[in-house]
Length: 63
Image (cartoon, rainbow, N blue to C red; front, side, top):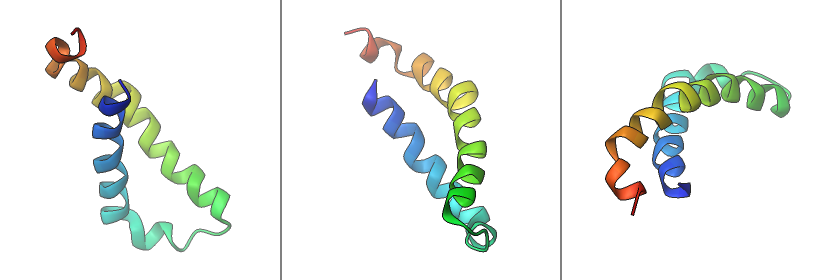
């Protein structure tokens, strides 16, 4: 399951910084910037990416 999460989180964080990085870097202090990133990444992971990856990789996960 850890690999599944990593498969989802790495591209998610990369895309967040690709599309919003310029704006995110203007947010200070760092904890506020981190909060903004997690407000996007966590719901996307929990409700979209992880369920889709579980369906896609169900045979591998059930071994």
